[in-house]
Image 1 (cartoon, rainbow, N blue to C red):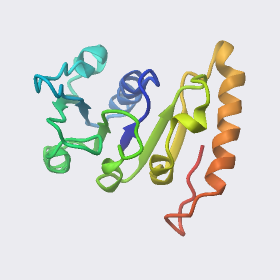
Image 2 (image 1 turned 180 degrees about the vertical axis):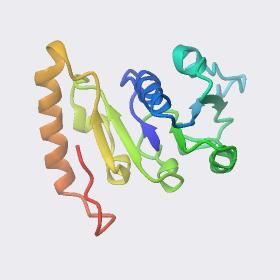
Image 3 (image 1 turned 180 degrees about the horizontal axis):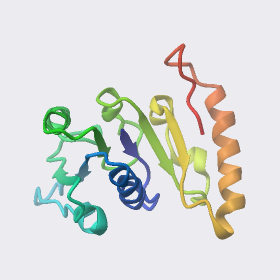
Length: 179
C-alpha cells in the first residue's frame, strides 16, 4: 500500500493506527517511510519512526525510514527492492509512505497494489492544492481527520473530489477509484 498526501494530512498517524490494527490481526507489517533530503547538506531528519512510537515497539512491525537522496517521485532509488526484501522477510503487508504530495510524487503507484492519497479536510482551495497527476494515479482518496468540527469540511472536500474524479480517464476497467 503506497500512501501520499500533503504535510499535515496525518500520514504517519494513519500508518501507526492502521499498522497496529493489522498487527493485532496477526499480520506482519513493514513500513518504508521516505523523507526528503536537504539539497544543501544531503541529510535527512528520518523522523517518521519517532512519530510511530507504538508501532515501532511492536514485534510484528518493522519501520525503515530512508532519505530520498535527490531521487524524484516521492520514493528512494531502492524503494522497489526494499519492498521485495520485506516481502521475502515474511512481512505480508508493506506500507510505503512517500515524501509527500506534488504533481509528480506518485512513482510508488507502480510499485504497490493500491495507491492512497490521504488528504486533510480543511486546507483551503483543496482541488488547487493537489495536482491532477497524483489524483489520476490514486486508487483511493481518503479524507483524514474527519471528526469534530472538521466533519462538515471533510464532507465538502469528499464531494469535490468525487466530482473531480468523474472527469478523469479510468486507469482500469475493474476498479473505479473511491473517495
